[in-house]
Length: 360
Image (cartoon, rainbow, N blue to C red; front, side, top):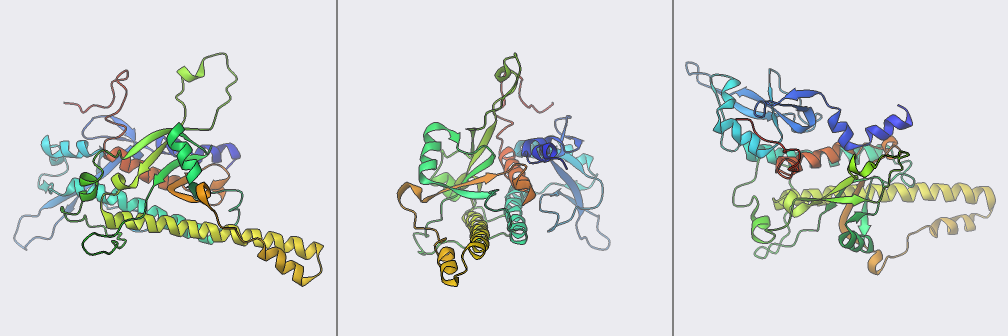
């Protein structure tokens, strides 16, 4: 793969658009597979003389290393909660089979598994970084924004990184006021009870958006006399609020733990690479072993203070150089699929193009 091809492959939007086209059962339109959900009927266990019954479930929602694709013929539906609800309201699900039914928790199950996929992608990313720690100083995959950078981002609306693909605001969870215990992380594939799902988002943060699109500091140089800004939109990066993105507290705790573990691996990789570099330099220049150890020990990071401390915002990066270490695009795509599942991107389409509508 050439450098230009790696640059294209490191773009999550281009990779989503490059997926095969599939026909949406509800909208009657062809869309890239990354913007769709695969739905398949699964046969339920029935009595020996009973009528066989099938139930409609979502497929290919979890990571392939965790759960493989279900066999059989499936149909595709737009990755949007409203589109899946239209399957039941308009009776489109009957095209799968004559004896198929839709359970009432289908939309909750799909939304939950889309969020589980984000946690699984974080686990896969951590595993890849552990295997390939080299190059951490030259290609950053995930890092915290400092408090100064976070303040500047909130005031200007510009992400201070050219190769940013996502910003996640994930504050640590507070203790429960009754039990005085923080919720433990959970990556269960079963949706949480109704009394816990969305409780904090609805009662404490009712107006917090799930995502906001921000400008980037990257500037493209186009050698053309045509006014490019009117033809191509400026690149934007989604900022995700974890409280709205993961309304279940235990699942959000798992997100925070997964991000912290990746930062720990990245920190250890940078320190090890820097120590090895200083060790090679000191061994080649200074014969005294005492001076060698002093140079390595001086490599320890000083305590950060004030606005130089890390904030609750995590920056996810992807470019041709970082792609040689690990691929962060699947994580960015998993986050984007949660975004469009909740309606962002479909509902806020511009009125000049008509947006995305369901066919009657």
